[in-house]
Length: 67
Image (cartoon, rainbow, N blue to C red; front, side, top):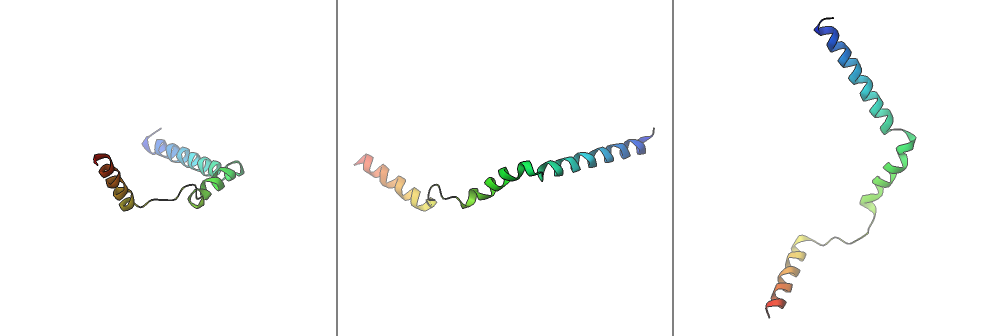
């Protein structure tokens, strides 16, 4: 067995692993989890506060404490 045979075996083995991962990822058992994950950006649990507004609010709170 020379180095080329070893390279061939490793290539085939990695290809089989790749196909297995793709099969697992696209299996029907994973569909519900992926659908839930796809809905996360569309769910409105809490409104986003811009950084500028939150920094202004933080300064106002500090001024109230010092007064």
